[in-house]
Length: 259
Image (cartoon, rainbow, N blue to C red):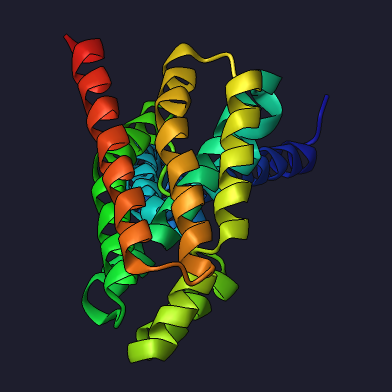
């Protein structure tokens, strides 16, 4: 027979174990309440859905910012990323368009200055004819760039400085600097570049544009040679008339091709 003393001991032990279990359960319940959680456990679940919901808006904002920044940085960064994926013919076409656009911009900006600042009539008339030639030719060039999602290239530092120096001159000094900038060497180089492109580029639209420019460009080269050689103004005017004739023929060809 179990003594009464051992009954009381067993009862006390059971009561103690029961009380401990209740205390532990109450502690876990308190920890599960929001007021007793650590701060990171309370806020993390609430913040995660909000961050996920904001991802599409953030991505759209980043893309919009990149599009806005593209004109100021030029197309060079995008071209560098995509050039390795382009076909060789397309890389050649894009390289030609970049070079042609830079040359056209230099010649156009210098000729705008010459049309009002040049002292010699022959120089001023030559510049005016170049501007008349570049107006339709450069418009087509911009279309060819846009068709490839290419922004007009920016001038290099040396090219910008050359135009800035030209803008500070007047009279005979301006004439000499302008003739040097649109020199025979530059005209010859441009003609050779267009001839190589006409032989190597396969894109039909670009090739047709190049072939339309070559006759007038060859006459510009001849006129620049006469201008640099100090020939009489009448000779330069005769060359200007031939240049206008070529431009008229080219304009008619463009009009017939667009019908």
